[in-house]
Image (tube, rainbow over all chains, first blue to last red; front, side):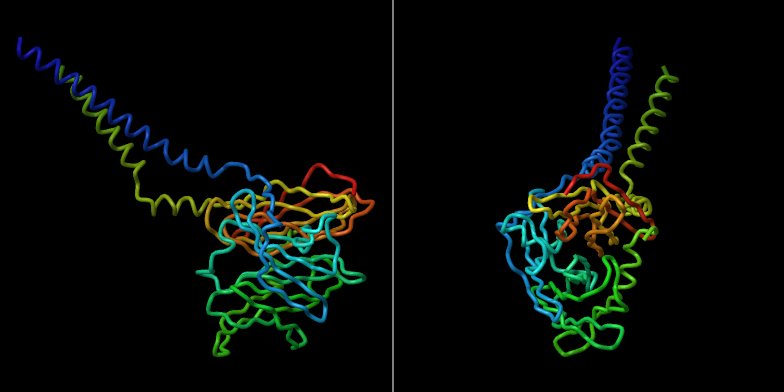
Length: 209
Length: 130
C-alpha cells in the first residue's frame, strides 16, 4: 500500500516538475518577443512645444542669421530646432522657431560620448539663392569650430553648450557648392575632429539623387 | 512505470535545454540582433500652413543605438525638392525640413535612411495643395 502511494506521489511530483519547467521555458521564450514588440510601436509625429523653446546658440554670417533652439516634444523626445529669422515661416509667430527645420530624438540633449562631432544640413530657398544651415553636436572638449571651404577660406561657426551652427549660401537644394569640412579645436587650439560634409551628404542621399 | 519515468525525465531535460537557450547570455543575443539591424524610414508627411508655406517630416527607427544617415524632403508634384534636411543621427529620430513657400504646389513628404550601406526610402502617398 505504502509502495503504491509512494509511486503515485512520485509520479505526481514529476508531472508537477515538468509543468513548472515548461512554464519557466514558456516565459523565457516569450519575454524577449514582448520586448521587441514594444520597440516596434509605430512612431507618431511629435508635436514640438515651441512655446517652451530655449535659445541655445545663434550666429550671423555674411549669408544671414541662424538660431538654434532646444524644445521638448509631445512623445517625450527632445528637439533641436533651427530658426532663420529672414526666411519663410509659418502663419503663427512661434513657427519661426523651427522654420529652418528640426531634429528630434531621445538623446538630443545628452552630451556626445563616442562621436566627437555630428552634423545636420538644412536647405531652404533664400531669395535667388539657397540657404544651407549647418548644425550639429560637439564633444565637451571642443571649444571652437569652423567650416573649411574648398578654396581654403574658413567660416566660423557659433558654438555653445555642445551645439554649433553656421550658414552658407549655395545654388541648389540638396547640394554643396564644393568641399566643406567641419573642423573642431580644443582649448589649446589643437584639432580634435573633422567632418567631411560631402561624404556625409553622399551617404545621406538616395541613389536616385 | 519505469518507461513513464524515463519519458518524464527526458521531457524535463528537453524543457531545461529550451530554457537554457532562452536564457543565453545577452552578449550572444545582441550580436545576432546587431547583424540584423535595419533603420526603417517611417511616416513621411507634410504640413501646410495657412500662409501658403509648408514643411516635410519623417522618422527613422533603427531599434538599436546605431548611427545612420538620413534625408527628409518636401517635394512638389513634378518631383522638385522644395526643402531638405540631411545628416547623421543615432538610434531613432524625427526630422523636419525647413518651412518653405509652396504656393500653388501639391506637396508631399519623403524620408530616406542609410545604415551600414543599406538604403531605404519611403514616399508619402497623399499630397495637399499649398
